[in-house]
Length: 144
Image (cartoon, rainbow, N blue to C red; front, side, top):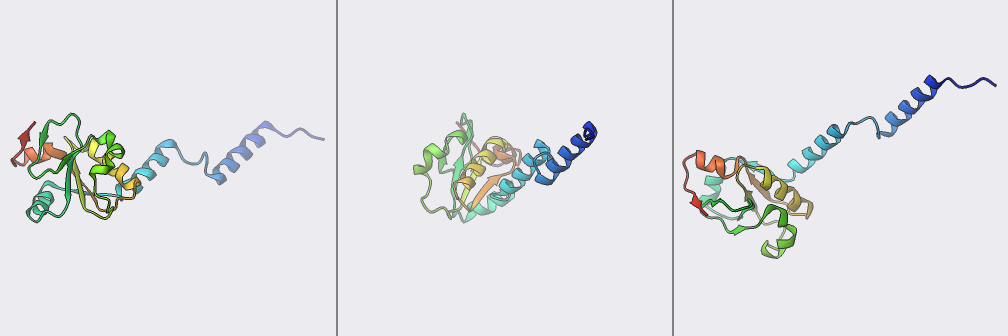
């Protein structure tokens, strides 16, 4: 019986791995595909969109930045972004309620929005650029 060449074994392993999908995607590709899913779980809104929404406010407005450095007028709650699940009792039981989240720049509110989406909240909005963008637009802001 003839020995199987090492190169044939290596090629076979790579082909089988590619077919199973385990080695065909890099961690970056997997991470990017997950972020596409979570980004679709909430809607990014601009400062001007938030201004319009505040005129006929029908949402819970939550600052998730830690530490709280300032507040946009009309804010209902401050909940640390990393303590969302521990503070669900402060959020509406109705998971269809509109909730707008913001933080300093966008990072913490995105994390909070993704966590709430994972907990089946459906109408989530994230202020793109956070209160930095709000202040840059020259809009009123309350220092904490």
